[in-house]
Image 1: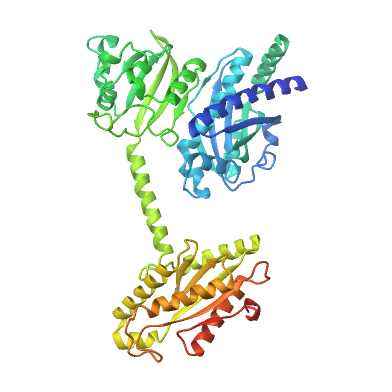
Image 2: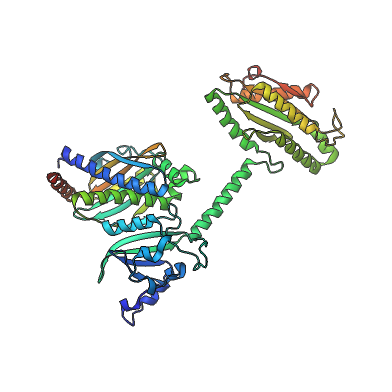
Length: 202
Length: 327
C-alpha cells in the first residue's frame, strides 16, 4: 500500500514529540541534558530486513521489546548497538564495566531506558491520534544481530516494519539507535487511517 | 492488606501478606486499594493507615519524583513502567528493617508498574517492589574483587612498583600520546650494581629486602604523579617520564642514583663500593622526533650498558637516533 509524504511527515512529527518526552525523562534521571530526535522514518517489508539494511553491523545487539495492543497492534523493539548507543548508556550509568560486557551486565538499566523511549513514542502517538494502547512489560534480549533480528523478524503475522532512526546526544557524545515497529498489514492500514484522520483535523 | 475486600474466609489476605515482595494496587487517582505485609515490614506503614490514602501521601517526602512521574505516566497512558535499581537506587523510603532513625540507609529496590482493569475498582495500577539489596551487595563485592585483581596485575608483588605487564601497556600508550601530541618522553633504565653478588653474600631473603628498600628510595624521589616506576625484571627497573626533556631526565636520574647511595645499604661484595649502588641509562624522545617505542627503549638499554661498562654507580645518556633499529 502506498504511503504518502504527508503520512510520513505526520509520523516523524509524532515520534519526535515522543523522543522529546523520552529525552526529558532521561535527563531527569541522569541529571544531564539528554537530546533525542527522530530524523527519519521508513517502511520496509520484514523479508527485506537484515543487519546491513538497519546499519547494525555490531558484534552484539541489545534489544528491548514491548508488544502494544490498541486500535492497531505493534510489536516494538529498540535495538542498541555495542559500539554506538552503548557508549551513551555507559556514560549515563557511569558504569565501570567494559563495553563488551555492557549488553549483558546492564540489562536492567537498558530495559528501563528502552521502556522510557518506547512508552514515550507510543504515548505521543496515543495523544496525537486520540487513541490508547495497552502493552506487555519490557523484555530484554541480547545476541548477534542475526539472532536478535531473526528472532523478531520470524513473526510471520507481522510482515510490515516501521523503522525509526534515532539520534541520541548526551554530554556532547552523539550516537544512533534504531527503533523498529512490526505490524501486520491490517494494523498498518489502521495506522494509516488514523494518520489520515489526524491530518484531516489539522 | 484489607481482608474486607476479600470476604471473611478468603485465604488471599494471608497469602498476599506472606508474599516476598511489595505489592500495591492503586486506583486511577493513585489511592491505595491493596497493601501487603512486606511493605509494612519495610516502610513501617500498615495497611489500615495506607488504604484509601494517596500513595504520595503515604510515602510523604521520601518518595522520589521519578517514581511519581512513572506512576502518573502508567495511570494516564495505561503503559507499564519499570524503574531499575541501577538508574534509581531507592525511589521509595524502604528499609531492611523498619527504620528507627531518619538517617537509616534505604534498601535498594526495583519497581514494576502494570496498569490493569480490576473489578470492582476499574482502571488500576499494580506496583510490584522487589528487594535488590542482595544483587547490589554482590555487585559491590565483585567490583572490589575486580579492582583488587586489576591492582595486583599492575603491581609487582615484592617491591610494590608497577609490574612489567603494566609497563608494557603504559609505555605503548605514553609513546603513542607523545608522538600524537609532539611532546617529549624520557625513559630511565636502572640496574642494581652487583646484585647477584649481594644475593650470594647475604641470601635471597636479604636480596628481597634490598630491592624493597631501593624501590622505596626511588619512588620517594619521583615527584610527578605521571612518572611511573616499574620493575622490568630481576634487579632491573624502568622509569617512564612523560613530557620530560633530556636535561631534566638526566637530573632526575642523578637524584635517583644519589637517593639509593644515601640508603647506605651495606654490600660487602660490591665491586665498586661497600654499599648498594645503581647504574642508570637515560634516553629521550625529542618532540616530533621520528623513532619507534622499541628504539627509545633500546637506546635507554644501551645507555645503561654504557653506565655499567664504564664503572657503574653513574648515569649515561643515549639518543634514540644512535640506537640500532630493532630486528
